[in-house]
Image: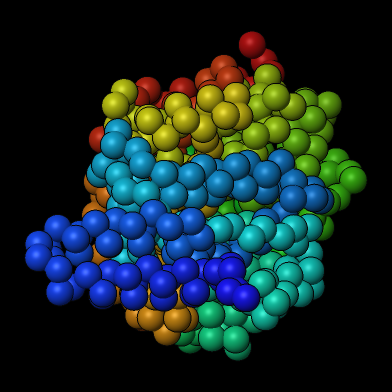
Length: 438
């Protein structure tokens, strides 16, 4: 009895044997080409998918941001796995799959870390040891990224951080951790440079206040802002840390109202950001300038919930839809068609991180961790190869992208417009902010 050919390796061996047997036939070259085509066409002979593990906060207080990030990464995988001539400037967009791995497709293996560091740690270990992912991507919360990257470091698997900003994520001497996005010190320099420009233009910027949630994210960014303000000779009236997920922030708002600073910088996740705006309206306090450090200010639920209270609020962003026909515009149209909303800065940074990781895996031509690690170290993406406004992607010895960037946008109606720096501005900065006082 002849055993049926059911295994992929059996089919491949038979097809190869038939091709070899034809080598003595006249017209070998055309037959060889036909054999190669036949091999590629055989069912089940496609290259094995490349697994990338991704951890997001899909439940908890940042679930909407996590879901938006997941939507963005999934669109990024669709772009890599498909063929999109309109995005030919982006690596891997014009060809299907990863060419250097036989056209292999990316398979995302997602997990919910709930905003909980311990859960993020456990999920990262599971994805690496049980799902056998080739690389990791994450994680939104800096507190989760810190422990998840430590797991990847011990396991010797590359972990690309798409958006978490705490300084020490890439400052611990790790060899397997890379970050494409800007970090806390970048934001701090941008805020103080913006405020200094306003002061030079005659605006009253005598004191500022910093309000931060007290996990790794808020504490790291707040510390960087205090240092940058000191260097820029900007007086800080107060730093006001608070417990993340607080039920009442009246005391913090009353403290701000008493101090009356010229600008307040909030470093808060979504639920806290929404609570602060509602509390400020209830206590009739509105500073001339509010600057949000992304996070809650970029969450898809921010504008629907308190956009009418936050008119004129400033936020940071490296994302801009761009001109019609540009890569960013085309991608935003694709995203909007699927999800009914524009990409935001957070989800765009996730997509760019994924695309940079996929490009490195393709360059590595392998799923071996050390090969991917070497390819990431050699990354040199130019601005026109990106879908976000970084100056490029290249990593220093700590794994930090030295060409990341951030800009400032201001809420007008139901969308943000770019206001700083001037060479990237699409609108003039409006001062003081209107808030709910139309």
